[in-house]
Length: 402
Ligand code: AMP
Ligand code: MG
Image (cartoon, rainbow, N blue to C red; front, side):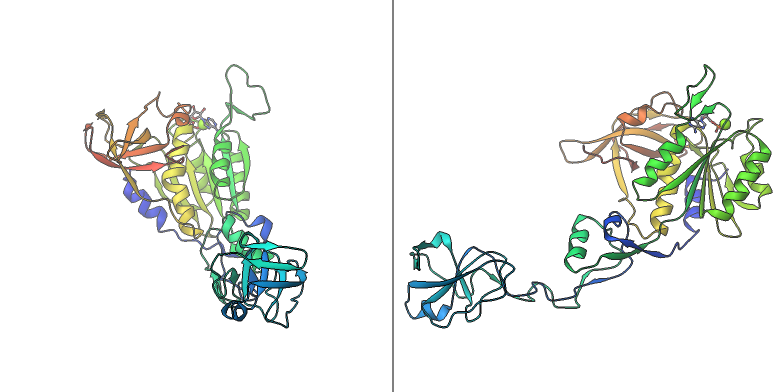
């Protein structure tokens, strides 16, 4: 049995590049940008009026003129008009291009307007006010978003601004989730008294979906031939196989044997941890990576958060979650020689420190506990008592403060 640190090191040393793909802008949210986005024109693209009012030439102000003849009105989206005399002005709207021979905008709020005249109030006028000059944010061909950024709403907005209708993004891996177990039925079916609904594939799928990764689900019975055949098929079609269940000591736990028959190289089977001790990890020569997780729903959750998602972050260009630590809120006693991932609710104390309070529930089968907690705290192997106030790493699986 290997340690958690060794398991992590082995998993992280498996590097995969899933390539890039083009996505329509509408579908790119949450993906990782794989190209630099450049402006196709200056930003702003023209001298842009930022207030409703009148456009004048500042020389008129310098020469003491305070009444302007309104010779026309120019809306946003219209080509520029022009003035030809100093005491002329054009009524102008926000978003319009600056009219020719003008350089300054005076807001309606600072004017008195009659049918044909705009009369200046007492407010001091500054040269060039209320004009956002062409190219002062970015020049044509400047990089506005660098490759590697998560495409969030702001990136979508910038991409739209520069006319990027499709974006080159990091391609997400093709993943199959295979759940195993004769006691499991689809959630659309009614379980008999000795059956349960299969939830693991839904949990895993949801965790992946939060990373914009779509996965396919499949369920198989505990049967060696079926397991072999299914794994063989999937090795050809998928980059990653995520199995749940069937890797322990039970008479019907056929997954490790089936993986071996299929030629998947085993890096490890069993990790010194609770939950999730039977965890199996390997790779096929043709490239598919196999994570075989124990069937217990909490074990699945822990292995996803502690190993699978960090590996995916690493190999899809995504920033890992920050490495957070918290104070343990109460003493914890735990005897087995295993790294203990205790489910905790993390709060902030009045000194601004993170404090993790364990909610131990009924062990790794007690999934409902996950609802009331927001992280696992990783208590290192080798102690029997973990003392209140000690600091340990936490693995958050939800926003900490909601
Ligand atoms: P196993 O690892 O196959 O021995 O399963 C361990 C425990 O997890 C058993 O109590 C199973 O019934 C349960 N389990 C296995 N797979 C699933 C699943 N897909 N959904 C919910 N519970 C499961
Ligand atoms: Mg099973």
